[in-house]
Image (cartoon, rainbow, N blue to C red; front, side):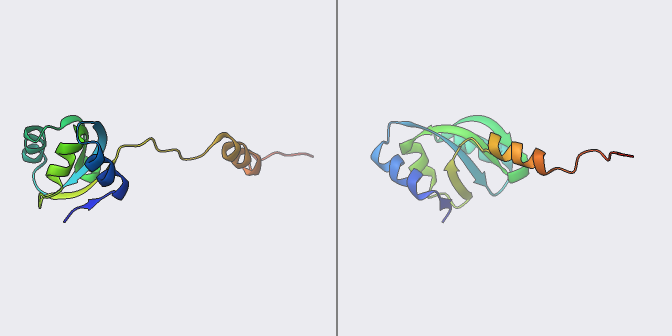
Amino acid sequence: MPQVDPELEQQAEIHPEETFHVIVRVDGDLDVRQEQLEADGFTIKRRLRLIRGFAASATGQSVRQVMQETWIVAIEPDRQVHTMDNRSAQTSEENSPGPCRDDT
């Protein structure tokens, strides 16, 4: 059974006709898996070779349908990733040793 984000699973069930943007990780040949996902109604946006998966969009119904496939490793929402906010960036710069200075 694949790992599926619980909130995504719930929303896909409640809103089967709504489009969801997801990351799908798979086992097996990526070409074959892309064809299978497309046949199941997914629109592939990007192939993510590093994690053996795809950035895709699909209806809630399609997302729920592929949850039963043995070759699906995980399905999660495709969200923006933030590494640090401006305050963190400023703090990091302030604490940075910076270039060496000769104050003599």
